Image 1 (cartoon, one colour):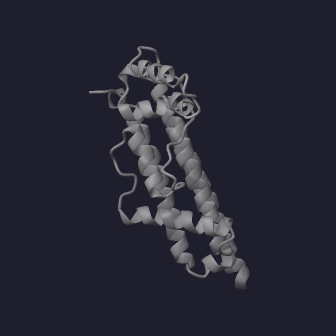
Image 2: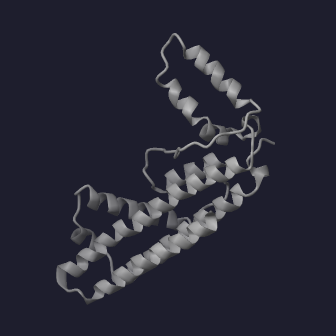
Image 3: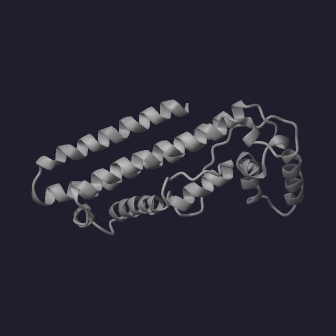
Length: 213
């Protein structure tokens, strides 16, 4: 799954770069506007990467046939998400039965089941959000090669949000960047996305990294 995802990410970033290079024939404000809109295109591939990595990680860990009792606590937080979510709506008459059921399941020998969950810290795909996802999976490696690249991720997210929410126009954002700056960001974000897939894929392929010591 993860090698196929890497190929798809490379294809998507290639399409983004080719589209951006084609815009150099434009003139005036239209050309500058395309520079701002590029952040929306980069963000789209990045968000797709993060969501796909999480889905793939869950599926691959489930495929290792672990029991709930096997899992590290951080993975229990993922695979017991349905039960944890149900506690929020449980009334006072059944809350203790629900609590007991939750903790019994956490040490049961039943095989884990797939879930659809994306851990979140409220920062909506900024770098701390991805760090929380990695922490939940038990991944200890960093997903950028340099710390300053973490803040480039936040820059992409912030510019995308500013445009999408109407706080700034693509023209406003585009004025702040040269074409060289933006081509560099396309390649750096591609590298970050591919590294994220790689380190999560390696982690999920090793069953010993999923289990309590």
